[in-house]
Length: 384
Image (tube, rainbow, N blue to C red; front, side):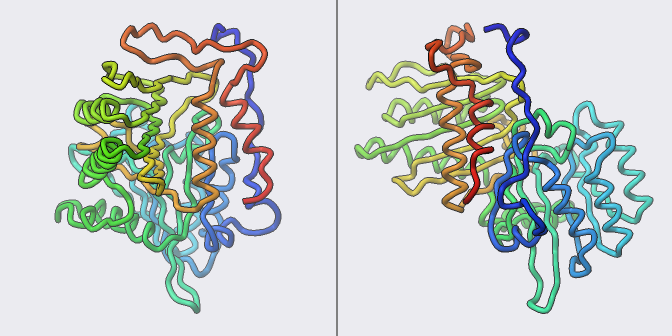
């Protein structure tokens, strides 16, 4: 099917079922994790979270990273309102965001005029992690909540970029996110705050090493005759070291499945066991921007969402963050979404050594267009 003549599927985003009604987003997040999937779920919930924080007398501080911002950013307006209401607001504004340098400079001036602390990153290192930490103090003490995301805080691109965002009050996740902000504020003192992170995988200090360990674990399991599998979804796969590890994994008998939208530098030889990984690219109406990592781990699956592609620049020369999804229902949801994408027979193209980018063959009777099926899957969910 020709891309330019395909039927438009875009539908209105909908509110996550747990966030419907009169409850504040904050009240829900303080009790349980929520995973938003843009552009299927409404981006308004994220804006509401920040608006609520701006108006909440118990909130003392908001820390947030900003990579690409909308020209009329409601995120920024919420942060300005927070500052006017006496909150300490810190915004990590990446001035090296390609094509957005001028816009971000303008936002810098606007934020500083409102008394907001603007961090401009680290020399020779982009800050690409998508984080927010909100600090709240009430009679019960100090608590932190916020989010870790795969995508930008941009309500315009959130209409067409497919991303995942974990809203959480997990103490361990928020502790690590706070450590990342400590580093961004005091980068001249070194990377010790990043090295202290125990829950998040953080570039450039721990993400590469942990990914290598997780792949090696699957290789060892396969060699011992146990089930071993890896499912990876990325924008780009070009890191030579990790690609070679995936080669070893396939050779050892690990089942590898890849969903790579952009740069793809792997050339898998047929293993002695006759295994070749399933590798596809999905290019459809929504831009597949999310990064998801799933490792079987002897049945105790490790499931992450991440801001980082598997490229040298992301793993070694950027500040990136990946978070493990812990809630059973959210883990299943992510797995279901990736399984739907792996079954795509309309917009999926085969990635192989020939570089033909041919569409996956499909039956006309039961075509699977993953973005449409994901919309249907999520819109029908009522409970978690």
